[in-house]
Image (cartoon, rainbow, N blue to C red; front, side):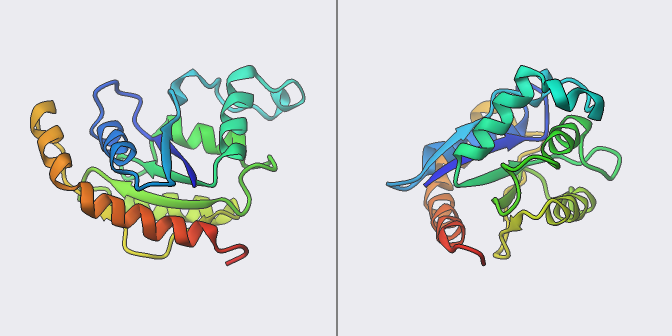
Length: 175
């Protein structure tokens, strides 16, 4: 099972990015989690550019098409989805790689409830299969890198179990 991690934050030291890295390290046998480089390299969505799709968009679409499911870790900015993630989803909305793609949301904050619902609605509109199971949440905001690493090592078994459940969901065709 090949999973692609998308981080909704563009910050290099984002707690959401650290969370996705922890998931990559906790992946059970037979499952890999690869993080997409940065959504910040994508140009602002413009339908006029779709005929000559920019290379960073093609790279993202190719990575989405090649994976078996998506893990999205997303902060909340002003009660919404951060612009970089929304921009990436806008580029994917009319492409063939995203419909039917299984998606699981994971959270580095307990304070992102509005963005989560907004993101779920966008993903459902894009015909993604949003994982119906319990979402993984671990509040990391305000913690230092070393503390986050220690906490995430203690979460490896729970993260592996969550990934296993999501992998089973992702493997169920047409659910």
